[in-house]
Length: 450
Image (tube, rainbow, N blue to C red; front, side, top):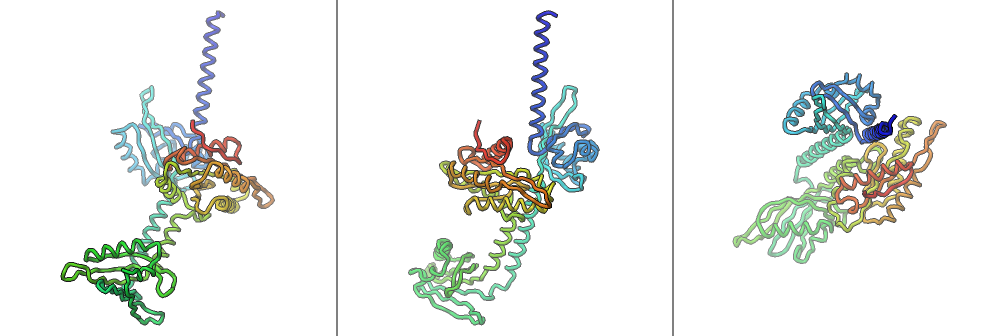
């Protein structure tokens, strides 16, 4: 064998090894992606390949998945959504080489799974056209959206119900004479008897303002100022304490009137106690924002509050975003049962709540994942909180003579060094979390760019 032939074989072997290594890395990447990956023939709809992520969403093997959907993307989509999805694909593909969809699929246990579907169309060497799809499970997000919609509808119904209550019942009546600065106020006592009280030097000396809640004072003064400038009607809601009682919420309907010289001479109004209505609104709002199991903020509320907080922050501020994942939680469910699993989630949530400050935003992002936004902190304080949380969570969960060791992995990213908005900062913290889990779990990692 010539020296040239040997060199050529060596080069060929090297290329084969590099190709195998590249394929292995690609497979690792595909199976590590969040969500699922699928390819299917654009003309026939035949499913060509799926990755581990998609199989994990359905909780089955590849053969089961293929048999369940008869190897067809068309059957993968829930029957009620197929016509709409077909039309959307046909419309989008006329102008773009990619499509973005949202639809439902029926799992192997007849559960409904919502997918966000992003796909790119590619023409192969043999002329066939293939869709390369990334599928994200958005079932929980849809459930939260439906819950919020239901809560909003209930809130609307409750608000309308309160409006139908007779406006005159138990209202506080006002009659203000501008020239004399005298305010006449009437209200009912516990026996239902109405009494009138005169407040002299009501507004010029500020006597009437001492009944208004301090947090509402500037707003009430602004409304009164507008009423004194232009004749008209208006509504304002504020808190007020009468006769030394606790602050109650009132809705004041008022009207101001001009005299002969076009100057405001009188303002009258009727204020209704809406404390119960406000409490009901707050209850519904809280229910819509909270995770039912832990009482922490749910995923949607956490995302909204974090995004709002960061958008109002200065670049010089230092906030830490923590992504927290409970290690070995699946083993708790599988070995000890879902009841113990629920108790474990509450245990983790309680420890996160205790480690961080009351002013920090703490939320459950779903399953065994949690998030914390720690405002106005430092690198050293963030490290300390992460270490304390690792120590708190590290424990053995026991039931029925069996036990599972749990811990937590933590990823930390900092505003504005690692991201100036929620999405960027979340990705950085999530990348740090992935590094913590790859490092053996039960630890924390701080995001390092590059």
